Length: 420
Picture 1 (cartoon, rainbow, N blue to C red):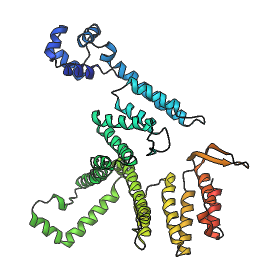
Picture 2: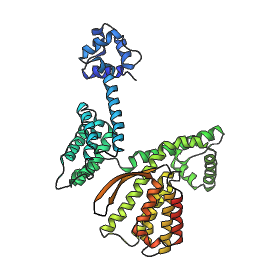
Picture 3: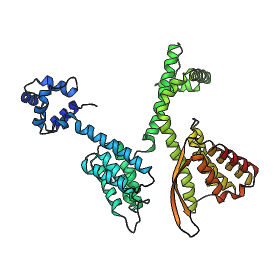
Picture 4: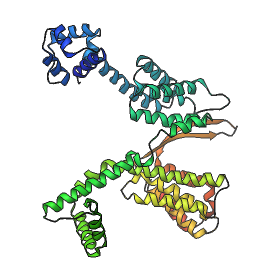
């Protein structure tokens, strides 16, 4: 448990526009003592704590930060309870909603809590909105998001709020508001993934330079030369360029793998997630242009292959990400099925092989609808291995019927089921 009296004392003093000297005089101590308290170098004597609290008209709990500690514990408990309820077969969301409503009422200026409460409100039904009847839960959620945007100074929270509001305004058909908010989001070359890749690259380069300095080898880099004529001469010197490339390649091979991982890993996951989003956007763009009648010959296949190429950029071992490749391969298979059965078969077999490489520990959760003989529909929650769920999906997908009698499809399905 961390007592944050130094931060709280300084915040109270600054907010009240009181000098360290004035506070010191009231307490009968030196201004230097107050300065050390605020810097966290030492703490006021216990006998002074009530005097300081009374001076600022707050409780000792507020001064010591105990309220903040208890609030944080309540939020963590609420998150754990929310997860427990979501996994429950009897979850109706009402209990979760009331849980966060109470927290939001008690912590009106904790905007992370307000954001989580708004999330429960907007999730009260599966759809954001029925335009004919935008229910009060969603209206309240939008109002909370707008209040967060007006008052919060947390940049990360504000960005998340803008993204959610863009979605809400779009569903409400308030497209001008959605566009205005979207324009406030960072452009792609200012995002964490782009910057992370640049930082990781520079970190490797700095490490390479250090390696070569230690080995007594000097690598001359073009970007360290400021004289234009010297830079032009270097670029025209083919032999020097080849020597540089060979030296750099040798240095790259000498990097300790653990060090390389340490320098690049903080950004690799973010970059991977970014490339997933880009590849999904390409697939969605293809569908959208087709629906609008804007598709040119072969355009959808080109977009799918570009999506696949972006996926291939990431070569890290991610066994639980098989579905990412699987969906693209399946879309390519269905597209080629119109003109080239053999190529379509190649792609659908690759899709099933991807499904077979899904992490065996990964579980699929969902709701299944069952129709009885009398037409009654019942819904049951299920939890089963993801591979088993994928196998059932392939068995039930009627668009794959043209492949079912082919031996390669049969073998791939048998392997998928065997691996479960």
